[in-house]
Length: 256
Image (cartoon, rainbow, N blue to C red; front, side, top):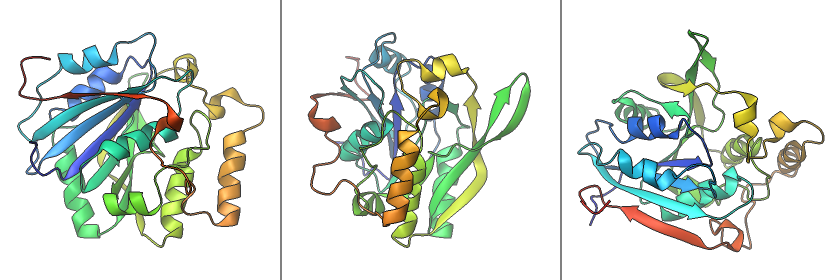
């Protein structure tokens, strides 16, 4: 049985070449507590995410276990994917973490220490390396949130399409439940830059595609109505009824 998990890191991915480097940085964290790494694969077709994940095991001594979850989908949907991760997670704290970020080995330790001191949810900022230069990068979806708050707001609103605005809506609904959110710049992550072609490939990003932004409309409607728990009446985290294939990598196992 795994140790008591303090932090669950949840990454969602679909055909993203930066994933391997990102996964390696998460699985080699030096922490005084036990943490887990959950990867939700939204139907990758050009990348064997499970094989890449297995290639960088076993990770650090404090990494309790690694989980690979996959559901079949024609399009990437970040809201559903994160909810799937939440459903399987065991941590007291959740970090929603993009698959194209890398961090230093003490990132989780410093993040957890800061959360305990501030007694708040944290919106975690970072930087991006582009053309040999480091620049500030927002990272609107990188959030460090206690488990009890995730369940209070019932995770992400699964009515969003692809990705874009769902992260802002998630943050706004936490705030409407009167939980304090603090924007932090340190410890920071580094975004591995990539072009719009890869960003939109098989993913449906409404920030990139232009036209009628249905996600912005949905987020603004939620803001206007004061929605808090937008998945009431359904069992959230079920990937819209799709079958979820679950594989747990035991860090100490030689079978992987």
